[in-house]
Image (cartoon, rainbow, N blue to C red; front, side, top):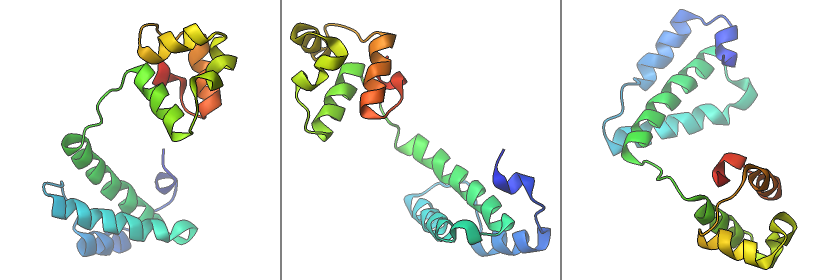
Length: 137
């Protein structure tokens, strides 16, 4: 449940916001950009945003999310590819994974995709990289 759902919304004030923004199902890149600018404007209000503005932010965010999921899908990545990417971002070497995998051979097999990552190792990697263990399973 969102914060806006816990607070009374003034229908007139919310209506004025809706008329100004005119949210609708996003069909073009231009509409997406327009709503992204509105999201940014609303987010800049921070804690000073009214309940009506928070409700509008939630609505517009969902419209943009739907458009972007359809037009910019994120491909699934293999766990070893995710691991290599995270290591590259942090300038890590395979030896830096020895506390997780215990041997260079094990590290090599995982990074090449020849060996899977167990749930136990995924949890250790998640703690190391501060990400969800699901990325490695």
